[in-house]
Length: 303
Length: 258
Image (cartoon, rainbow over all chains, first blue to last red; front, side, top):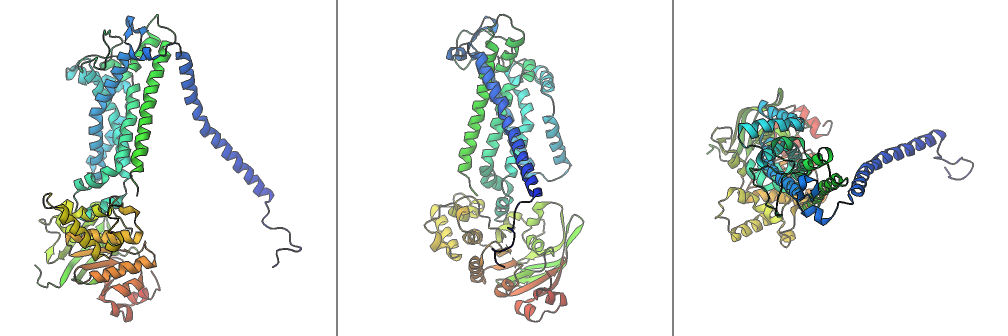
């Protein structure tokens, strides 16, 4: 048939199609708006904190120790305490969590034992942090005689982060294609050879990202550590990084913030905000490191 | 060793269940050494399951029960003394989708040697020689000799599949199992892999699962036709395609169902 002539033009939008297009556009804008709205709280929080904290923020503030019961001076010893807690707790939870996840994902068959372990992991993740703290007091402070110390607090944090590390590691391992494992098995590789030769090298970026993301969570927790080994104030003469022995109590940013904001009197009004900014900066910095690491390792792995 | 050295794989009354579903029903078959045997039949008939029994890779997937006997070179592979590692060393498998490891061509080929060998026995020269021999055997040496250290996953699919075959060879396997090795390849790649299979006959026993009747006809010496977990017919390929004994076989090879 000839395209010209008396025929009306074809494929024109009908009223119904136009209505659908309208709904389509509305939906897209609406959902897009909701997605964009996610940025608002983050920007608002950061802006609000920085503005309020501005009078106190300085390099001096970061690197000098608190004085006068914590209301004057800087926050150096609290920052160091947080770093101690995070590092010690990850030293315990990362190896245990990663190795347990390797077992669960690579070795375990579907039987009652595996199901029990998985159930335990899920439920452990759901325990409120204050309950972890109470458990830490009973188990580490008293039963194991570690006292209120960095060790007790770190172990408590380690137990708290363990299930999340297991979950993220399992996810990273499951992302390694089954075909790689089959290829190994079919030349007679044992499971351990398969894990070491193929599975771990291809999942290490995901595993590390999962572990590093736990840093931010550990750094922010207050409840479990205030019961098990963090003190509200400790006076120091010198600076430096080695302020605490593992058997001592330490200060921590989250606890310091809680104390200054609610209990202490005579602090500058900008002080709690400044502590919050430092804590937030620490967390964002660590997250940034994990992103950089992931991008770097991804670019070295292609299949 | 076997009473009959010309038989590479022999099964007696092999039954296999996935949970309560019986996937293989009393399979008894003898697969001759050094030839290409095709496994054909409609989807879900148990071809791949049977293939995967021959190096016991099925057991990695849990919930599998096996009864009966499989002998490879006269040794029952379900004997308690049989090491799965040694078994899989001599019964290698090639998959539908080429699955080179995400490491270099060179490392892919020496992977098996490194896994099984003593560290001291693996001198640079020995490895180099093994790589060259394996790549020559699969006709890849001329293409890849200057690219031994590129990542194997960057090769063309056809080269990847040949590499997956080459990867088995340094272990001196008795049997090479192929599960639809050409279904991810184009016509040219299929042709190349088929040529390679023919070049490997004599030395290795090849068992190939295929959905492609023309391919079964072109490359196999013997064919087994399976249906619903049973082996209906096993005869020289020419007989199966020219005058099949079983009416179901006739219908299948003529393309009336499948």
